[in-house]
Image 1 (cartoon, rainbow, N blue to C red):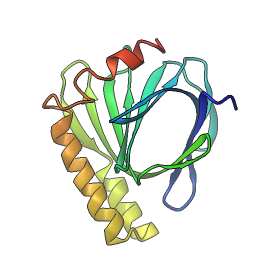
Image 2 (image 1 turned 90 degrees about the horizontal axis):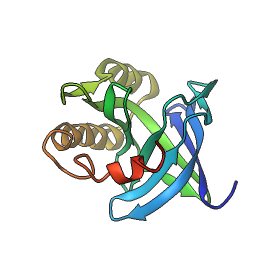
Image 3 (image 1 turned 135 degrees about the vertical axis):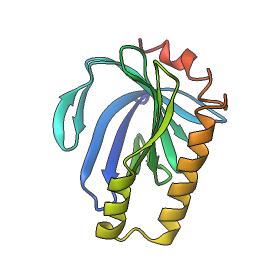
Image 4 (image 1 turned 135 degrees about the horizontal axis):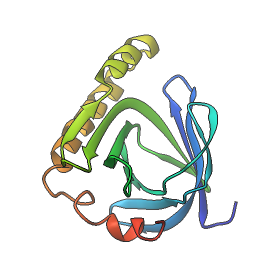
Length: 167
């Protein structure tokens, strides 16, 4: 993979494939590493081959329990944050464990919602999430619920310059 390219690999806690796609490294700043994904990018979603129809930007923050996906129209979610374990970088691959919970800001209304609490509860039991995973995951979801609605960066406008590079 060229040096400006990164492989993004999301797995579930039990190791099952979740998402896998190449992305272009756009920048690194105090918020984290910004990655761009163009329309037409071949990917894997829930273990199945897919092609991204709409471009997006991903922020992989430094040592945080979430990742953020920033979307242009016509996606109905302007910002979609996955609750994850902190990302692990191995050369040009970033490995992330998705912990089911998502925090989403809707484009049309600006409403912020917590999603997939039922999946989190089910997987918590099935996979045996330990307390040192449950507590930071829930704390990250709580923080994001506020941050997506109150103008906290990168959710207010910082992402727009990166999104402009892929749209």
